[in-house]
Length: 65
Image (cartoon, rainbow, N blue to C red; front, side, top):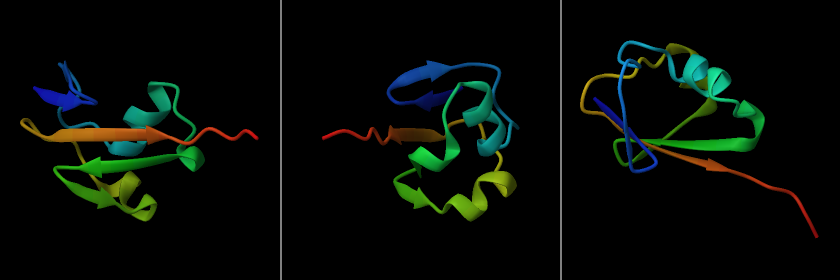
């Protein structure tokens, strides 16, 4: 099981971070991802696979004034 933003998510083990973000409706250009306590560079989203026990925090940037 993988924890995403404090919620346990099943059936995403082995999925690439990039694919998970896209399938979940995130705009990859407007998010930051922390994986197991470390910021994951955007350049690694396509090469990083989610593993059982991972903890992921996704911050979505919102513009405004």
